[in-house]
Image 1 (cartoon, rainbow, N blue to C red):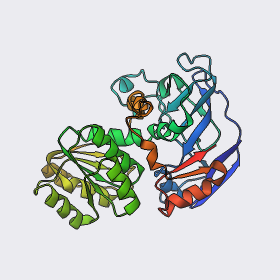
Image 2: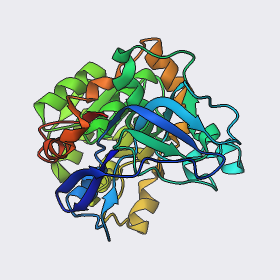
Image 3: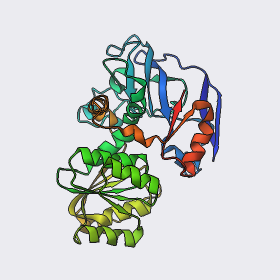
Length: 338
């Protein structure tokens, strides 16, 4: 089969890879219906996060089960399934507490930009639909695998409640779906920090009420102006830089909640500043598996349409163009057809 490999900064290639096989009795093999490029993939693509050797890419996926190991009991060949970017047995004490992305048997998926995929801990990682969904649902079902699940965790971890004011820092796919999630959770006011008209437009479709284009101290001042001087009740940090994190902390009201789901690069926090900020902090790799059943149902019941974040669809043999388009901000998120 042909799979995506990263060789170095901005050097993406589609090349021959061995088809995955069952290697453990808890594995499943999927024929992927759709996969995509994640904003977090761009850290390695840009060379900000270095790689030591050619590396397979991809961690968002949905598709049809082709084969299962002999110890897989709940997932059957022929089912349509969605899985998380982090595998989990869904039975350990950490999983039972809702943090499957820190499961004691966790593995991070990394080979999903390909036609076939091996999924470890299949019973705990995968969620099957009752029937094969119509093709029109594929983009939104694919979004549940990571970006929607991460945006939902961001809103949940930031304690978004009905009637509250929410700030979303970051207008990538996760930030935009953080807006959608906050709207679903009943937020009254949703402020988005964005400088890109196309992303602002989608943010408003998802439920944003205010757009802030300023950054740094000016951005914080604007948020304070919009919130009568106190800051937002809930802040979702969806970028992962020092600037975005500090902007998020300074924009949260005392006693407010801040979630951080952007993979951090170069972020350092000042203990004294945090002490006097009186801000609740919670984040990390999103426990997508916790939310998957609910999110899949919301999609299939047509309550939400997170697939709108895919504004570019390409066959997988054009994966390099998909990366270029996201790197150059010509696309929010690229869906790949295997």
